[in-house]
Image (cartoon, rainbow, N blue to C red; front, side, top):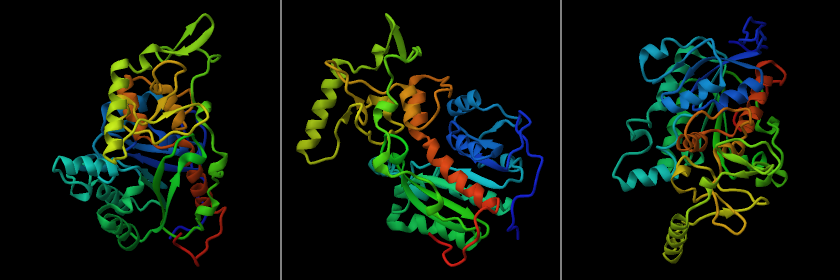
Length: 365
């Protein structure tokens, strides 16, 4: 059993820089998790993402010595996975999310593990953990994973990870509000082959009260223009007109919200300003933007631009967005909050490098 620091290795990135540990990026999306683990000293040695548009964005931002593999359920793809220190993956959340379950119920479709297309992907992770026995893993999902199917789904997952695979697992629901101006609660499962002293108290998160406001991610009039999101107007940068809601759409959303308000339902347009914090950005944002609309002086409110969505998820402005607005909204709505991942990755790396002493008295946080 490996319990000491990671041995010196020749793991180098494309620039020849030695990296501290290796990881594989499953259900990779556009690579937000990868950014966090690379910042913590990791080298990505395998990537899997089946959506061609997400893979396009991933390729535009990550130059690799390995290609992006597709469907992880194919045995030939799994056979190509090399040994690695950490497995990371945000297996699809739609079968477990409140919105996803509600939609599938309305359509008479199965959800959770009974969802044939996405619900069983957790068990593909189980196969990889069983075969490669990495020293650690990080899994991310919607907070509803804990309560889905009256808690039975989560019990199965924890039974597999703890009892069948023998990992020490630490779970926590984290609201990214402390790092970005957005309320976004997700559950994180951190697992180790042995107790290396990981504790959520060692993950450095600032208090939510000190979290940023939307003014930090909204386009500013003095920043360089970035077509097609913003344009230069006589030396002043302004958001492109196409992001302002039409009279027809704005009128529809207000009437729809009023209808649900009278019925006692929770639907409503969320119109926020620069000193506010937004609701959760979702993959459906491209439809009407109703969950996060930005005050627009004396005009109809506007959607966030894809660049503002990227900032809202903690991506740097250097992150390339090579796809259409519709695809970009879906991708950032499905992504992780990068600085949350980075902080978790840093704490995990310290454990793997022996910088935190094991504590066997409390293996479960």
